Image (cartoon, rainbow, N blue to C red):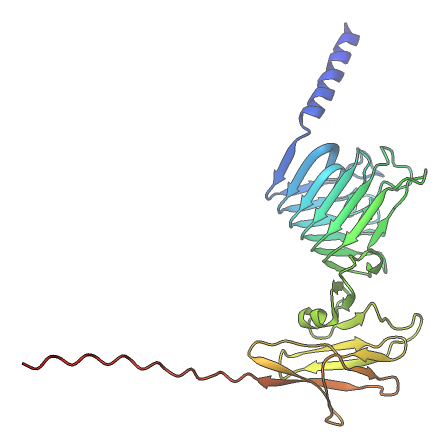
Length: 329
């Protein structure tokens, strides 16, 4: 009789498991787990486990020792929130793994991130794509991650993401595409082809834009801008030119020259003004946008934006139609 009950319990568990393979929307909440792989039992705070499932996470706070959010299988869309991989009270900050793990360990998995902050306090990356952690079980299915926005911070210096792009058998596995967001280290190898400019902020965060002009428009003062299509030579100290717009937007940024010491001066825009080019602070010479400058022998070159206020045309008023004189009596 006991064996019969075990069988029925097993069937009910399987049916219940498949029955819940639907859609889950999370609008807000706080989710915490102290599950630690060294203490046991293990487990991410939020983890999708069925290929046919869909989870839409709109906002909330998620903390976990093993990790914060895992897409083991199915589709996940994350709009916003705070996702922290935290330390274990017993085994310290290095216990556990990732803030965001897109695994493909329970069927194919895909995740789209449009916003949120993902932070790992351990000596692991903040983002891991593909079921490749040594000793992990489960399947080795395709896992894809697309990031359109958000902030990703790893305590591991110089590496915020790891992608296991092939299984042990050589089959396609993890795929990662960056279309936006800020990162604690470079993710240049995973950029969408439309993103061709890197901005490094004063706090060390990296962000990416289609053009140098786009980067200059969005980057805060103190940023370093690099044209990834014309980067500095590897292993050398890049030559830089300081672009100043104190009289306009109020920002100052640094533009890195390419391997030959050349920079292409970007175009700027400002409401109510025409952009008049770039003026050398020392010589007073003005260069138009798209001018290619060779600054190899001009260390410390500083140039500033020139603005010309748009004249507001005076529109003559239309005279009113005179009234028809009244008929004399």
